[in-house]
Length: 484
Image (cartoon, rainbow, N blue to C red; front, side, top):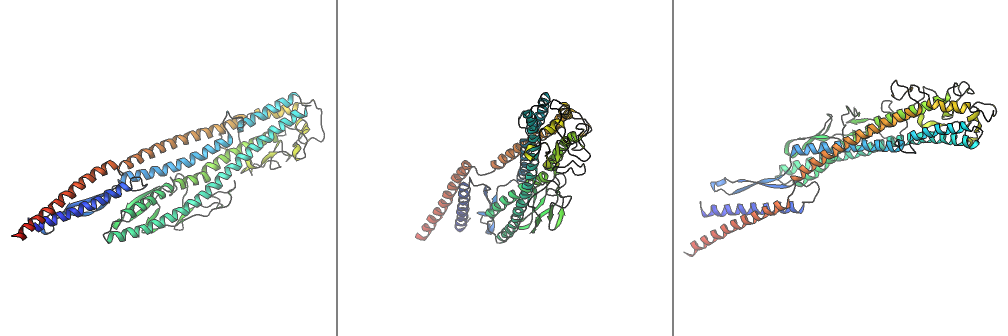
């Protein structure tokens, strides 16, 4: 090896160690930066001119693509489970638990007890008033729950709109970043920082819609949903959605009154089983709006229907004529089985027995359709009303099966189903949370280790000193030659 070759080798070593020190300093300064991937300097022997030396091949991000993909899917699943579990927890809070004195089942039990108490002293106006208050509280409880279910659907629709707008913005930003990375790559520059920014955007997208990342030429990527839709491949897709101001019980995507999703103007399914954008927080909001909340509304409507029909039966109150409403009404009128949707929002106390609406309490004792007060000691109708709550009958709707229920059992069955769904959802959320935490920890293990970086810095310092010593030695040799 010539003296010049030794000098060139040492100079290349200095350049490599200088660049390595730069990489280490970048890693240390970003040790706590979210989304930062550890940099590694790649080196290889230089064989140009046959003198050896070291060549800088580039700076690479230390990322495990398989682990990253798994963590992104886990993040989407966690977001999905968190949203659905939150809705079911909210729903259980609305209706109450069996041990809650303000629960729906407790309101039904209160009505039955109040009717029994009133039948023991039918002449006591305060007992009739207490029974009417229990009936009013029961109707109000159902109304409030129905209203909150529709509020949840409205909030879900608004969340879908916000997420779709953010998704479109993120996809456009990813398209722009792809172009910048490709340009930097072709110019031989360092695009690691751009990769970090892009990765954070992909993480954000994958939480809304679980995606698979496919590498393309010159550092660009393509994104495909796990349901098969193309979100980014060269150009960004445009996801379409039309929000509404308020969601009502009658509105649904199937009826055309609620918007679904389009990808580049092509309609896509939004169901939790086959939706092409299912699985993330966006899919969870569709599940709440179109599946979970309507199912809860259907069961609540069935409970309201059961209550109305029990007291609307002329066999219970002989004073009721054809088309007359009983103790509970459908917005002031008799219930029509063909108009059940949204009944829980409309159920109300009959104005004829409600003093707050100009009615008279004696009608609870003598009959809704009675022309005048009867014998104040006659408790037969009050007993009949109490028996109506305890009579077993097959529900006309709500998916309760073919079994017979009394009013208390029907309400308890609905709340039991809700509790089971909520428990199952919480278990799924717990599993998703644990999975995400474990994968996140594994991913962080590949991140910046300050102790390791400091050890590497010591080696860099030693290598730098060794190369500098070679240059110093070569200089001494040259000076010796020049002095001859």
